[in-house]
Length: 434
Ligand code: HEM
Image (cartoon, rainbow, N blue to C red; front, side):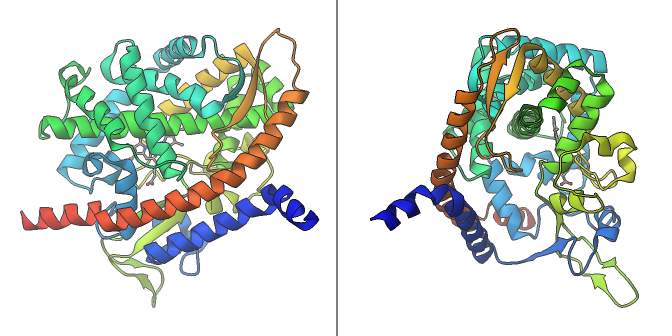
């Protein structure tokens, strides 16, 4: 009896770790081990950037089983998502449009962020989940980037519904709800003529809607929400950094952001399919058709003393000299929001720091499946954090037990379902036939 009780009480300390290990084994089993890990036995850390930048490391989707899984998670219309398009005319047209929509002067981007923060943070306080708090902000921000007018409530709800559904399924904490996502595509289809710059003329209206849906209402909203949640979690858990960031200059906040994205890069793995051989030395080459899996967290740890420790001071020197690629590699399809995202994130962090004191006792991991539990106390209000933090710690541990089981079951199902649907493989098969 006592033993059973001890097992149950100790669940949060041992079960989640084991379930994660089991999940990785199940995923590998279903997915096969087609990928070449970089860094790994073939390519070391020292050649990580060189291989990532190689012109033959340029295939995006075709020929990798892993792509079926990403297409499944990012549906509908994954064949029109910029990150999944193969190089060519369509890709160029889409990438040009994205650059056009993201080309907002710094002062305008900051002002837009401030306005969206003022609307979406009104009335928010107490125990929250940071990702849920900031997602409406980034939904409104993306909407204004695209349509150059304030986001109506109906559109915000559709965008948040879609982005939350995508990120929950990516983390295997929920299944896909395709109707929720399609409602947003239909809404965008009806508004194509109001987009503030011309959309690629060679695309059908349906394709244009899928493109906008993918780049601006899935990728942009999900990535900005995740990155901001990580940043605010870091501030909540390092009171000294929080105080300094609140009163300090932009340079310090930039260092905090850089260190946050070093420790918690949004990409675990970015994959590329080789379109030709990549020679490594006189005797070895990576063959064409290989799937290269670039491991961001591993790269970001290498070459730093005590790499698991949070230390914004590492970025006293230019980030270019460091193993730090939060927005990808310049030579190989980096993030088009490389310039704009940090400007907007910094402005959003300032808005939050100006309004609240932040505290959190929850686990902070790279995948952040708990969505960043945090106590937001309005500035000037009495700060009674101890009971709230004790409650948060216990709740987070027990949620972790339940969530890890949910992730195991839903993740296994989705990996299996994606293999069954083979969205990417079928798409390229049909294109070859037509
Ligand atoms: C802090 C926020 C963000 C981070 C850390 C981030 C990170 C990244 C990274 C690492 C890549 C390259 C992955 C690879 O090599 O495969 C990427 C690609 C991309 N990102 Fe971002 N991103 C962020 C925000 C955004 C925003 C706001 C947008 C808005 C449209 C965006 C759109 C894209 C697109 C379209 C690609 C694919 C680029 C291509 O293949 O041409 N990202 N992002």
